[in-house]
Amino acid sequence: DAKTTQPPSMDCAEGRAANLPCNHSTISGNEYVYWYRQIHSQGPQYIIHGLKNNETNEMASLIITEDRKSSTLILPHATLRDTAVYYCIVRPNQAGTALIFGKGTTLSVSS
Amino acid sequence: ETGVTQTPRHLVMGMTNKKSLKCEQHLGHNAMYWYKQSAKKPLELMFVYNFKEQTENNSVPSRFSPECPNSSHLFLHLHTLQPEDSALYLCASSQVGSAYEQYFGPGTRLTVT
Image (cartoon, rainbow over all chains, first blue to last red; front, top):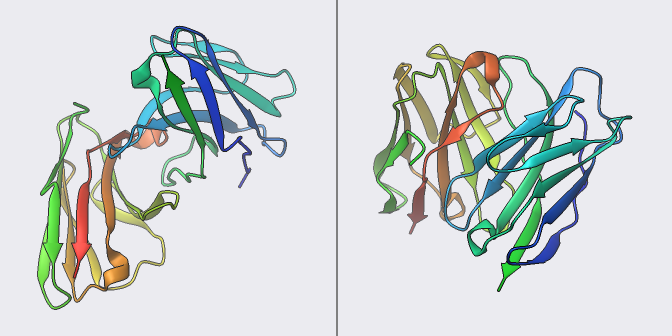
């Protein structure tokens, strides 16, 4: 399994962009990058995923480097409700296997 | 509201009790999962069901017994638990072809006394 490395914590001012990095230097060609977040005392929430192209949805943008060894999740205008633990997960998109969560990055958004 | 519900939300049980956790998904998914989250630890996968068949058991002790009667319902039967089994138990669902786009329920906070 490809492993990911994330900083344990980050701070962001409300209204600013939050850029959360993830290193996955041993990623294989068939492995996707997935991002989830978990707000305190709630179940994890799917945010976005990508293979090699940058992706954007209503929640966030995902930037994957050309060599695919790292990626950045961008929350363009962070709010207090974005305070959560953010998990970067690298897995092949195949049936029968499940997510493996690491320790993630605790993002604290303050006013 | 993710379309995945779990009951009860909180449960306190003694070590000799038998109880069950229930999960229901209203998303038309065909894969369901149980995860355990202990304090200050990452989520741990417990069981995976694809099309009602168990496809993964992550070395879970036999005092935890899953049941998946249909694609919409998943149970976790508990008996003779230990205090260290106290944790947040999370259920999730997905389409089999999109295993990593999972939708989680709110969890059941279990305390074993």
